[in-house]
Length: 123
Image 1 (cartoon, rainbow, N blue to C red):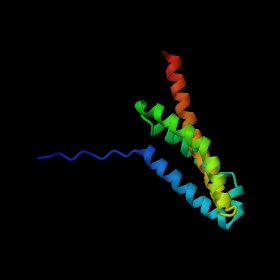
Image 2 (image 1 turned 180 degrees about the horizontal axis):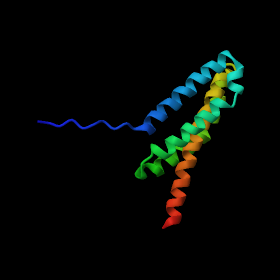
Image 3 (image 1 turned 60 degrees about the horizontal axis):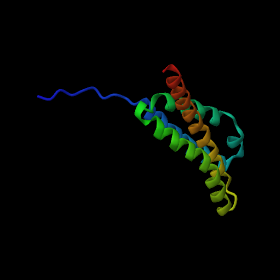
């Protein structure tokens, strides 16, 4: 007889999905109302979620890949969003979405960098 193990909840993955979903929803609302895009709370919320993702979601063996992917993403997202926004006639929601993703991934990358620096300094 096979014993069923209790399923673990991976909070880092849940925070990651919530962060991406929130960025999409907030960007779409910013298309309807400019007051959402100009508020500070969406950026603060996504930054806090990004910190949790950075702390809880990245395993030791994934740190280098995550840092490389984060740096490339954070550098290119601004260029890509400006290009797409220009092609779509200045659609502001694209730029807001890119800014929200930057405020989500930036703190996650910063947390992994800090953890890695402390790990290196300990040795």
